[in-house]
Length: 232
Image (cartoon, rainbow, N blue to C red; front, side):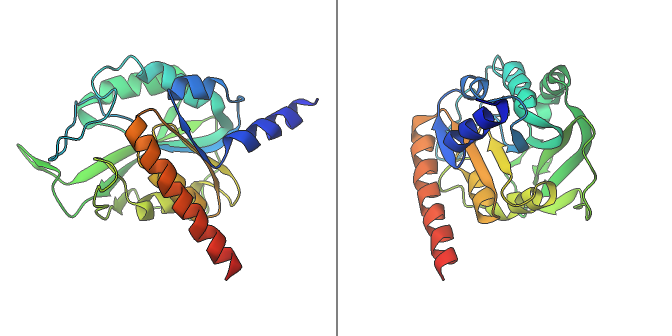
């Protein structure tokens, strides 16, 4: 069987699914250069707990960071980009992992929030992500601003749940319809929902049992919405 046929078959079994397990192991099963865009929100390495006590797996130990970024770089197609959220207090660790993998920073995005997630020396009212390139990606025809509004998601399904609206504009900017978006730390599935609702394919990975179930149930509902929209 030709290599392209193998890649096509593997893509069919991987796409439009939330996969349960370690993202490093699951990405190792994926062909190289098979992903069109990565949009992900990994643990920030800050041992975060929300007001109700919910936490995130692997949010202290950074042993997963470099190997996961190496795999993310491997599966991303040449001359494409990734958007990765990060914790600003651990920027050295994230930057080291991205550089070691081969990513080059080509932009930085600030997501402005209307509320404070925490108050110390300052009120923390933003999230941030780096735009990372593999190779020399083409410039978008209409570049987004590097400061965007991030509406409150309500965090009903996950303690750091991102709003679909904010993610959808990134997906529209950096992909074409029917291309594949990967979220290796998919949490409640917001990236996957944004991809499907904008006419893209998705691959999500979540290792936490509870969030995997919530994300899978959520995506079932999104698939139903998309199917109903096509019939109307």
